[in-house]
Length: 457
Ligand code: UDX
Image (cartoon, rainbow, N blue to C red; front, side, top):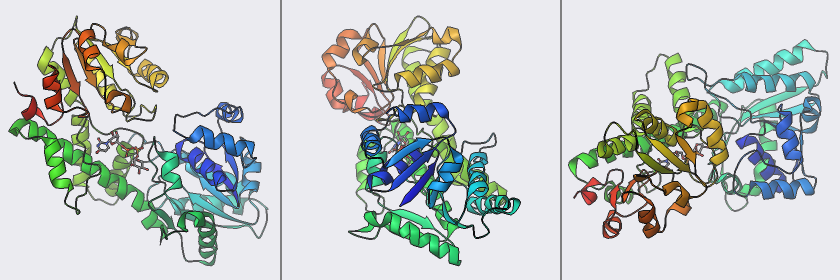
């Protein structure tokens, strides 16, 4: 099928590349000329395992093209995916200006029948606004009198770092459409497009548009709730003398609870959970509802991002001037260079505010960290941050090692080397990577999250 993808960010680029991989003819549009030039020269603007290969293969096969030409993009696709950003407004609601601008562009140029797919995470009711914007544009011009469209909602559930895999092996495909004649026609096209995923068993959930839009928010809000719940339990476990990892196993074995997404840590970050939780709260407020649980989820997460730094201060004192720390992991999670809402940014702020100097290392996010920290920090604060060349290099002369992201490369480090490089054998582990008993045997002072019973001396 001929597909257009509007927006070559995370969701757009992965969707475009994967649909091309299935044999579709994909046209990717972006307003950012630099990004398009990069993509046309074989580059990839984000770090995402496997994506570069899929894009290269399909570019070589002529199944995917990148352009800033709006008219050509509208002409190309019988299905037009809107996958542009929906950044939070000042009040936390999703800013729809890019989504609506994309809709208007389609309305300005379209002929015949088009399926418009909302792929970006958008608040309930957005499809109606997209329809209205399209109708307005169609009414304002003397274009094709037979031009018609239907807007469907097809939210994306992919995880950064596993995006290609998630797209290619979805656990569910959610499609919301209306039951007008156009809506049914659009559903038939979506069915054909996603048929390769439904071969072994049906993975598509068909529903009305608003339910599909809501599903995405409810899923992310539920997952964020699990994390905040476990973080709150971990902090209490620290106080009462219980091991949160034992508790995690104990509760996860109940199939009603399940094992996934129960990891206490340094708090959730990224482009989705913080933004989507806020946007859902904001939507609720528009309907005079106060989502008490989600308010707590957010507050607990903000607090959780402070926990690692607080543990450092508790151990080394409120005045950290003259003290130097090693930080491993800057991205908000492994396998990405994304630093949006990353807990590492809060930790660095705390350490620098207390007067410390730091050496930081991340396997892929160093360039992004330099960019982001230059915005977060003043020049004199930035001067107290050294960007290390390797995990080992970061350790030199540090009082302690603080781990913020659970990269695989940090899971089995050379503990002798760590001990030799650090001034003191102290590790603060924001992701519970190591077993306290093993650390004790290796003669480390070890501070995990919610495991103090095992490390008390
Ligand atoms: C998430 C959803 O998983 C995905 O379905 C949706 O489309 C977008 O949002 P993503 O933000 O890429 O994906 O990352 P995810 O792997 O879900 O992790 C989010 C955050 O939660 C990370 O900061 C991670 O460290 C944290 N997390 C996750 C925990 O702290 N504990 C856990 O048990 C799981």
